[in-house]
Image (tube, rainbow over all chains, first blue to last red):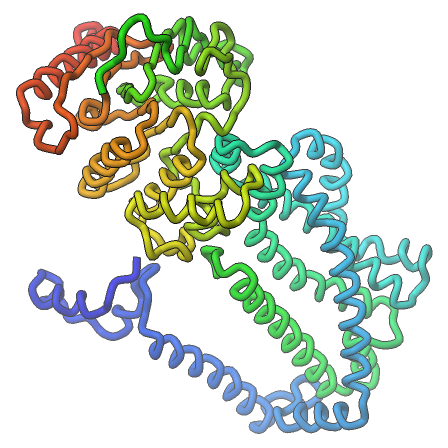
Length: 286
Length: 273
């Protein structure tokens, strides 16, 4: 429950709480209580600034060798240089192509299977043995096999992301479909809906917000699989770029790679949140 | 609103219905046992009973969502075998489709049957008007209060023009003021579009206020005890709840419930022994 902050002030004046003076910290640290947006932004900025400050002190103060932690200016310069000679774009493009295609294939295949698995007990019994076995199999353990089958080109990385994402996606979507309120299906039946109409007009739309969340979460995991695949075997991509920079002890370039991966991940996250708001304005989470 | 003569065939007839569920460990649990009930056309029958007595199961039976283990249910003489648009239901929980607007929810039934857009819109706006939500056609359920959502759910059921309306504690989750408002609204709606209504609740006042006849349902296995017939004036207002006839009926219902409670729960003396 979000209550206006002022109420507490007036309560504190009249109630027994008034006798105990409370600092701003205690005002902010009430469990699950909303805080003013300005306070929130202040804390956020302070936290980010502190992080950068620590970085500056450690590097410009020569407390840590540049080999382990390059200074902000060094990382920035490396980033600019790599952007100018085109290597950064080339590696980022290679990674994006792989991650988006692998993830999209997994979504196209995994969402229908997940909905079926969550809605029909028979389908659940049919595919649960496979899914339950593979879900505990780290996809990194399959990389050698995939290299043997497909080689070390982009197709192998797409396969890594597909396998890594698909089985998790199926289970998450199945959970979403299984938790569609049963009363919503019942009410549709009492309004005269046939089984097919209940599936098309109630079950499927009801899963959309949960599926949207699942897409966002699995995209985050896909980045992990991508970098693992690129670290094992690649001649391009952001993961390869990091590994290659390590070989030449170009720590500043490693940090550029990390910043780009983090930034792209953040962009995808914001994109999905925006899509959720625009495409599903009725969703309670929108 | 007086029950029709004995000669008229009932609109809805439950004959000797038993429902048993199979529990996890395989034992058969009777939810409803040998229950019979006749409801006349345009009659409102309320059923009061404690939680878990099988009230909801009774409604789900008539809706066709649960099959009787034995016995049969007939609507206008035809055996009920599966859910259908002729038996509309309003649930206790909020069952609006969140991805549809108020209008989309109310016209859900007509659209299922492939009615033309124009017709769907007209029907929807008429019933949205009746439940007093004109102006909220384009709102999504997440923007509505609990009472408004239940009014939309009632409009959605009515827009489908069912023969029988099954109401499973539609006011159960609402606060006291909203509940009173809803009860009066329900009677208003009944005046304009009279339907046969089977109304289930655990609120004795609500059951007596809305029902032409009130039944007390026993705890597991669910059976109906004697009926209480009310002869309250129509149209009713909340004032009847303080009338002598109402209070007398309430005393009878309370006495029945007390008897039931004593029959099903062990007496204090036995607890001590």
